[in-house]
Image (cartoon, helix red, strand yellow):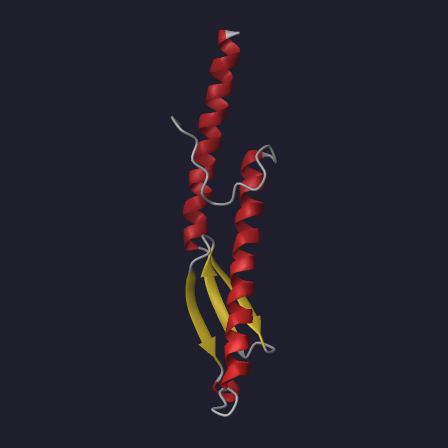
Length: 111
């Protein structure tokens, strides 16, 4: 029994190291979302932090600011959703699907 627990602990520690590696990679990842056929793009990190927004000057119409706001919102939401999906995909790979919906913030106490 003792050897089994030791093996389980080693597996958990290995999984934690893999998760930490993925978290670092996700922090550096640049994941894009766009709206208006690419007229507005947003870039987020794999940790779902907004990094930049680009707006094509052609879409800027002082008479229709609401449309631009909608496009920015749509692009940002898409970038964040893409970042979330990427984080979940990477965490599922790291855990072998054993711990779904962990996202990028998993911390296993004591490991």
